[in-house]
Image 1 (spheres, rainbow, N blue to C red):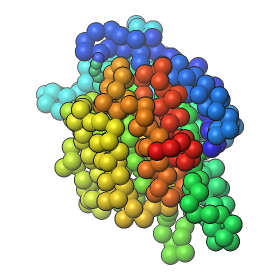
Image 2 (tube, helix red, strand yellow):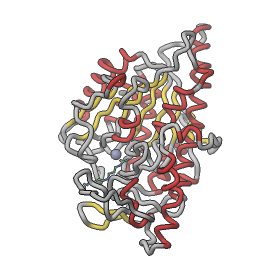
Image 3 (cartoon, rainbow, N blue to C red):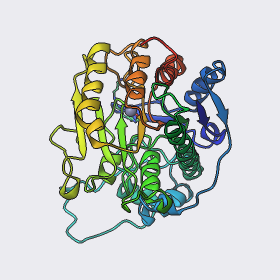
Length: 377
Ligand code: SP5
Ligand code: ZN
């Protein structure tokens, strides 16, 4: 499996601290996460080929899902924050315009020290000097992988047509090892360690490609399966009113981000029925998780008849995750990868959460190996 990544995913975004339950804590979404995953992949070079080749797709694909004002803000917030006397750790809002805040004079803040709340829904997305560059780079790495997905998917299809590819082989799969993650980022809000929605950008890019139009002129169909422990409120918001891509998420009930991800959130208008939310209790075990995923695939993913699958790959479902987790063990991850392989479609895996650094390589690697059919499931 080809793995797309870049050193910049380690070096550019390194906040020192965040807040948990009101207390200052280490920044769990740390550069060591990428290093740990990379180490696993490099020590399993029979399965993985890591490339640092990154193409520049520019602003356009990012602007398809994010608003210009938000992008300008991410790019300039830190410098302004420092000028106004903010802490060097990075930008964090002190006031958020709550929907019941009585803004009777319609007043809007004038600088990023006071304005952070306009573009941020929590205190878990610290903007440092190079955060915009880091998020930009993660999006470009993801797009580079997406472009390659189209190429390998074409090859696979030709192989199937010519009878040279055996269909029970693993379908084409690629992995974008990126950080910062993306699935909490809405069109104009950062939060939950996320700034630009890598998966959303990739899905929209596939849908937008004129050369990928089918014979009937329709765009290719994309199904996003979000297996991060947390609900991907950002991805859901981007596509809530459209039927393409489909967004489906398994996540912890009553967990962060707390206010989104109920089973009753099913999409709106044309998008009705194309957002699928499956909240699961904290007590969810390996068998229960794999069963829930297989049920989701059978009931929603297969009938959707997508051309491509994008996986928001979080392993913060792990039992020892320091900020999240079900009762899921490392044994479950190959089974999860195997369930995704059985869908039989070209698949792009994009890294989201997972904070137990010690087991991160094993758990992410488990999913990818399971997809490749390399481990018993
Ligand atoms: C991409 C991603 O996984 N983002 C998650 C961001 C979660 N941030 C806040 C989590 C708060 C959980 N508090 C539980 C503390 C247990 N010690
Ligand atoms: Zn998460």
